[in-house]
Length: 304
Image 1: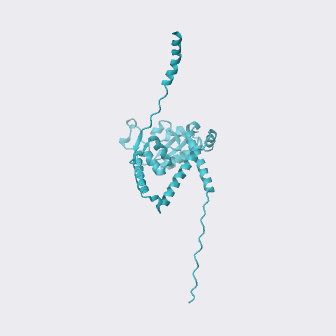
Image 2: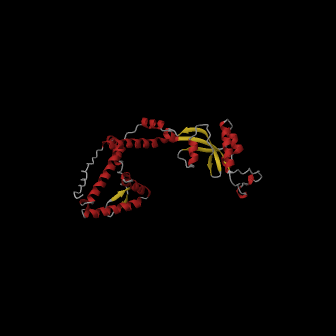
Image 3: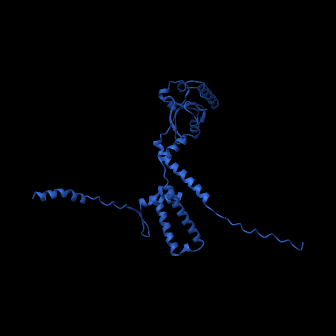
């Protein structure tokens, strides 16, 4: 009896393991059923999108239901054309041949480019050779305002007893800003000039700090260009904006770390390899255009 019990105990885990086999994954739900009875899942739509022309990719990503409705119309019209064998008739045959070739060419391009091997060493090399797009500059600024003074309703109560500064014309503000730039480049303390001269009360309260700027930031183009041209410690020429001239100072220059941008660089390296592959394809694609016989020259008129 003890032997039977021992065998039962030893076999129990085996029986439990067999009964606990993982269940088969559930089939992905269908997101659309077409008129011909065919269906599509989300995964199938996601696989289709990269093979589409750019305008249809955008449509499928931004409004999948609209895209699938358009696709349903294409399928229906294609079935009607097939029933009439239009693909075998000119001039439709040539059009069908073109679009089949275009679709297969896109498939080959995706097959090749998705098969590219991109090593960590290639990513690091690209990063080191193309760091400027990842440049970050900690910026401070001085604003020299011009134009109409702020109205009474615009003044904060805390500033009610403050003696208003003289309102400068645009030319006076430009001249003052240029003078300050010269002083800073000659060694004047930028932080002190912020407190003495800046008309931007928000940044002035933070010592002129305007944050860390990147190339992709949504800031006025002329201000971004002025800032991105600076090396650490440099100051820009006055940049005119609505209501004032800005003097921009590069407090510190750094670069986004590789770990933060490696996925973006992976795509850039992939695009560069794709461009090289297409260039090689161009070189190796032979096309001949036979010269037609020149038109016969006009015969001289014997009556003349």
